[in-house]
Each structure stands twice: as C-alpha cells, then as structure tokens.
Amino acid sequence: QDLYVTKKKRGTGVGDKMVAAIAKQAKQQKANAVCWLVNKNNKHGKEFYSRQGANLHTVILCDLKGKALAKKARQAAKK
Image (cartoon, rainbow, N blue to C red; front, side):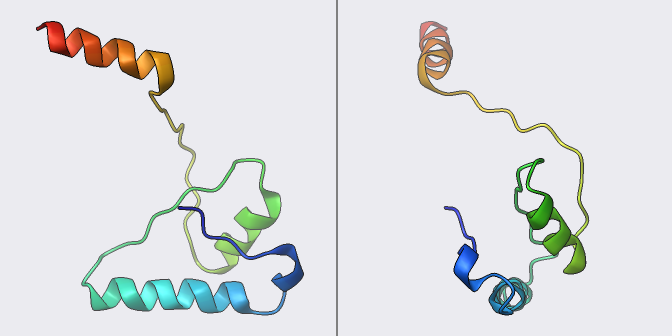
C-alpha cells in the first residue's frame, strides 16, 4: 500500500510524526530496519527522507506482471 502525506498537509510536521510512529512500531517488533521505495524523480520525497536520517540507495526495481508473469507460470507448470 502507498503511504503518503497530501500536498495540503505537507510542511505541517505530519510526515515527521508518521516516520516516527513507523520507527516506534518497528522497534517494538524488534525490527532492525524499515525499508520503503521512493520514485527516483521525487526530489521532495528524497529530500524529506534524507532529513529523516534515511540512507538513499540506488537500486533498480524489477517486476514480473501481466502476460510475462503468466508465461513464466506456465513454464513452471510444464516442468
């Protein structure tokens, strides 16, 4: 699911509170990290996450969906 702050609420501190709440929940569940995705072109989002102390990595997200997913599933079923 996508989790984001609407344009109207940006700059009000709600994003800071959301990240803090997520971090608190993660620590309560004994998680060592929280990971999420941000579009490489989302300058404001990347700046916000950087201010939160997040490490921004360069990765390529791959997905297999639609006809390609169905084709691969059929290949596995044949074996």
